Length: 328
Image 1 (cartoon, one colour):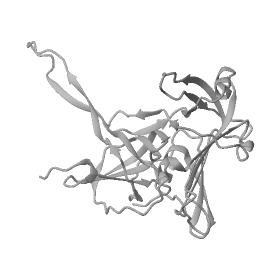
Image 2 (image 1 turned 180 degrees about the horizontal axis):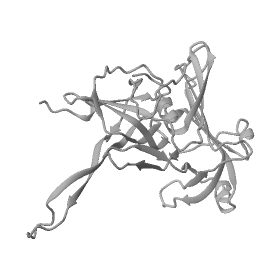
Image 3 (image 1 turned 135 degrees about the vertical axis):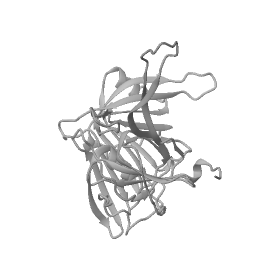
Image 4 (image 1 turned 180 degrees about the vertical axis):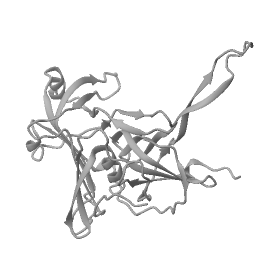
């Protein structure tokens, strides 16, 4: 069989209507890195039978699939990942041909599941039901593309046949970034944009596997506590952010990626907006090299805000009319 490179591997996602039940792939994801595959756990029979060899048999006791995927953020495809992370979405038409999707956290421990599909040059096509995103990081660095990193877990794969097709999408770059902070969410709109060098936010679902007697395949994935944390870096021009950390201040945070040069629908722009209504500034650090511009890095933690009944709100504007569950 012919050898091939990782660029020839395709991975796609479908939104499951029923947990454990695979659906057709709805979106093939452009990627920059991939390490998703089936794996297992084995045990050995170490009972002795009159020899010094340490084991006499081996058994597979647990099987599942897991791995990571990285890619550049595109306005349409990122919605499938956001739905998988947060679990709830409400969609509406912004203008003819443009749509707005509001993602919020679904307060359940059995969150939204995905079917993960893979296609490789000579290997069978596979579908992995019960796909669960255990963590997702969104990053932007000056001079680079805005990126995502996700960690998946799923049931072992089943063979199938995929038809691979990549849709035209709308790229969101780091130069499209807008960052703001305010005392509360209500003040974010009027706040001045802050010049950042980098921004990062991670959503951690703390997923645990469930295995049952009578089967070696994973039975379910349970997401436990939901955590939000991240950091941002900017030039050290005043002590405002240092004092936020030292005083234990809480701020509302808004991070946006909006391509104002691209029009979709009648007059809308493809974009992603992340609002944290209640974020604690937890750590401060600064560079002090002789020949470097002094920069500061602030670490923050997103928390639940009782006043607005939310910990995170994400708005996505693109050309997808709605994110709906797929069919077999």
